[in-house]
Length: 315
Image (cartoon, rainbow, N blue to C red):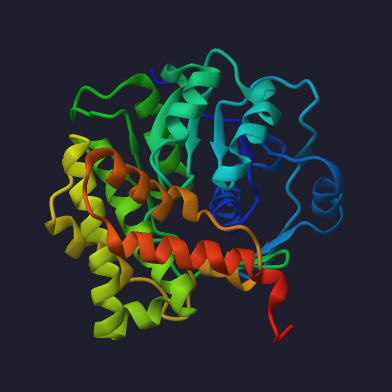
């Protein structure tokens, strides 16, 4: 019999973390949930909680140094730049039976976490088709989307014990999921979508509506995605060009008023994750001798935008 996931720990209470933990809290009792945080952020969460679609949650906050029994499920939902610190902060949550999911963008967080905790504990995973927007301590979304997850390869009828445990849990708490046979392809597909839509919307300062309605915006998004397909082939990743149109279909399901995380970062004048989007594509292009001019342009504009935050004549 599969050992049920009962105790859930999360590190990274941003838009994605709030959206999914809010859904989990509809089923899992608060005493079985813990959010790992420290310092001023922890005090703010303890005092004010967070709001998700208008409902306020007072999640239990756990300091990284506190000794508690390990979690059954540990979810990472931080920015990639925060990952190394998050791994150190969450280490007390990891025990012999802990399963780890990383909802970070990019295609490398599972490897980094696996090097710290053991690769056998970490499943590949991502948030697909969700559109949360964070404003202060409030997160709103119209589409929660679903979580594709699993081992790099998943054979129906022969899933690993870890996959079976997470499948039972997500079904129990009402979060949509998929267990793809080729999880590596799905991870790269989401990476491809992020490279296109996150960078283009950040440069143009537009929401999903522009991607859904503007032919010119769509051409730019597709061009950035096509360069990911080109470098994926050199990396021996099965990412066919037809996945671009499926990615565009998923983007059409999101709220037209929704915003990508990169656009939200630019609007708030925060560092973005462009290094793991266009920056990664540019690096792979150089590695394999593949031209990636669209990503070079988008990456360069966003990096220049970050450096210009303090010089705006409109502030």
